[in-house]
Length: 309
Image 1 (tube, one colour):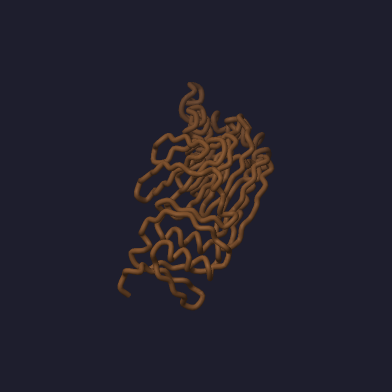
Image 2 (cartoon, helix red, strand yellow):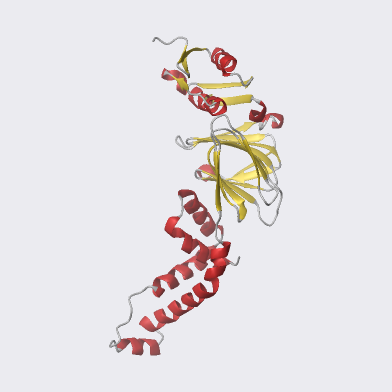
């Protein structure tokens, strides 16, 4: 697709684009000044095309056309836009986005094979969106996924999550989105991203913990062999709030796990091998972090041991 066709495609899609698509559009504009110029030309031509009709008796229109100013120039640009729309419109409609949403329930996992050879493993309670006509771009809206990306130097894979774009050049990496928190860990290859305006490159064995709400970013070292360990029940947490860890357990087991009081904001670090049996795993996790647990109906409730009820 040429740059001009891309500009027309973006202009047509703007009537019903999602927030993530607006982010993608902004990134496309920023990628190259030529992209911005192409879009400006399309938008201007389209605006002129729908400009108010010239009244038949308005003689100044003829005069303006003779000196290439005013309405004469508008008609010319409008005519060019119309020709482009007539020629390119059917093609763009055929090449338009074919959005696919993959959403897993709590306790469910899913494997996704994209037509470019990239594989994605989606954890429970996750939501991923991508265009089946352009599988080099995807959006993780919530939850966690492990990506096995096929290398294509001419078209790097891009994963979007919140306000962050992760650009990959043939990599195995894990991403977790929990509210305003984003965790990225690289097992193979490398990725580039620019959270909070910082240009960052992550190689194998490196990761970040990003809290967009607090505008904080921390780089960390990770064991590549543990990345994606959630598929086998490995639960690792590095300075993560207990409330966020409980949300991960909830996604894994499909049951509500509530955290009471100040315990929810306590940051803890550790690794737990889950058995798949919540009756064993939740009490073991509570013991690890120095918390009490109880059940109410089908819910699990955690509370700091030293807090008054």
